[in-house]
Length: 233
Image (tube, rainbow, N blue to C red; front, side):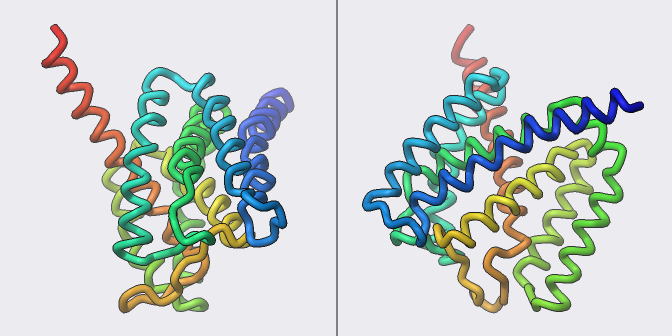
């Protein structure tokens, strides 16, 4: 029993500990950095993290990482320029953002694919869902975050529809962690009154963007592989 617990703790430390790297990486492009052109340092460090995660990834995850970059960039343009849900410190979408999406996604996948963590999540799936439900209820009641309430409803619909996708539970926590860091450092900020809704900075519902993006990403990869299979004998 002690050996199992030790293995789990070591796995958590090695996999989740990697996420701490984002604090200094994002700092260079933050509102607190005094370094001129700090955004390019953040871009370089993000590219290094991308290569690091890419080398460890499976073939399928590598393909997904490559696909994420252009797809997330398009999504960022829609979210910022068209919908105005949030804005970046320098006014435009920084180059490190779409690359960073790929790194974050790969990190969440590798955390979940670690056997001790995957088993822990699957055993406690209902409790984790309950924690999510409680958080969404609290931000609605006390922070009047109606945008997160809507996005939370979609999140639970996705989790019910895809019961075998427990990975979404991990993606959610990873995304929320990055959102808190990015908004705290001033790299980006959410509009707290988008359309007819009210939300926080960051909104808890931001996790749904990644979950929806994952569904689109995997569907795109399946279509691409199907087309490739028809073209290549």
